[in-house]
Image (cartoon, rainbow, N blue to C red; front, side):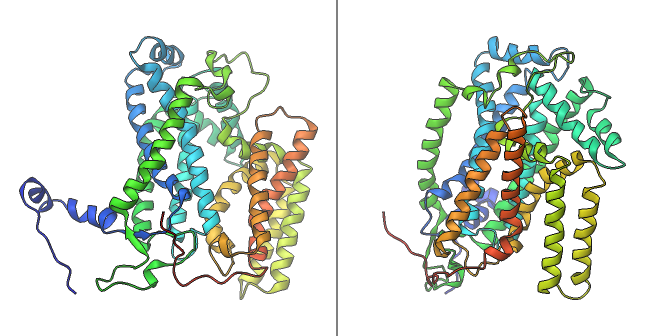
Amino acid sequence: MAEKIVETTGLLGWVDRRFPLTKMFKEHMSEYYAPKNFNFWYFFGSLALLVLVIQVVTGIFLVMNYKPDARFAFESVEYIMREVPGGWFIRYMHSTGASMFFVVVYLHMLRGLFYGSYRKPRELVWIFGVGIFLSLMAEAFFGYLLPWGQMSYWGAQVIVNLFSAIPFIGPDLSLWIRGDYVVSDATLNRFFSFHVIAIPLVLIGLVVAHIIALHEVGSNNPDGVEIKQGPKDKYGRPVDGIPFHPYYSVHDVVGVAGFLIVFAAIIFFGPEMGGYFLEYNNFIPADPLKTPPHIAPVWYFTPFYTMLRATTSDFTWVLSAGAVVAALALFAKGKLSGLWRLAVPAILIVVAILMKTLDAKFWGVVSMGGAVVILAFLPWLDRSPVKSIRYRPSWHKVLYAIFIVDFLILGWLGTQPVTPSSTLMGQIFTTIYLAFFLLMPVWSRLGTFKPVPDRVTFRAH
């Protein structure tokens, strides 16, 4: 049956003849059919968009009174907190929003891991999502220096110095990032421009691309069933789908209400969250002559910071051995063909040799960055015949639970001072983290899988 075209009139009609407003609303809201078996895990996508709006709006108001000058930055933050009407509320919304952004995004990514939302045909959706995560980390890092407190200053000093470990270009790259030989006013201005202009533009562009790509292929669901390939009604609409608006737009209001209650409770009763959201050292002006006894990043960076600290010269032997074993396994099993069968193992062996010739600090940077970048390769690492965790073997769920606990322990270790025992624990849990992904092509195929239903399982509520 041909689709009935209803022409809009009045002001909306005038706009529609010049801009596809109604068409876009239909394509992405009222006529976008999403699976009808979404659960609470699907709140976090819309919540991430909500927090992005909160951060942009509060950031605009903060910039009105903030001075990106090493002499006045700390005082301008104090001025916002003490003198600007409602300034403390805006600042705490922004600082709390930064942490809540990562809470929401981590849970959103965990849902994707559970239900295989990175699998075909959503590879590009997932890659855009990993790009959003990387941009969010960059945005948070650049914004971390702006209060110009002790932890902001020394945290930026430590992180920027890491780039000096890169062979050949490292020292010049660190100098270029800082704009000076030490973290200074030039660094503050650079970080301010990245935090306020450059990264937000990239972030918003990736968010738009993420949503467009998602709506092109359709949303995943807890069963991993493709509703577009299932039965359709006489109008060609998926029987197992319902319009996103008004059903899920109203449904998400429940998640938004719950989130805002928690968000407001933190702002009004514990904006520092025991020093995890706002470190106590950051309420002290930056002093280049006084190093804090324990420098650690904000909690959402600590899992990867632990991996950086864990990569000592001794630990590179473990990484070297892992690279050699992976090379031998690829060569012996014949999973690669043609030139790749020799090239990939050769590259891995060369990497293993370089691990013992280059500085361990460099490999710490590589392991920290690789722990994030490896997420982008999940669509090709996961060889399971089913998408959703619902239909995988029970011991797969145990592996996911171990991974979650491992990530939380890595985060906790990153907040602790460096000791021989914490370094050893960091090495153990870093190995578990990397093994979860690098061995995924093997373990994801093993076990007895449950049959996947032809249609989504749905219970009215």
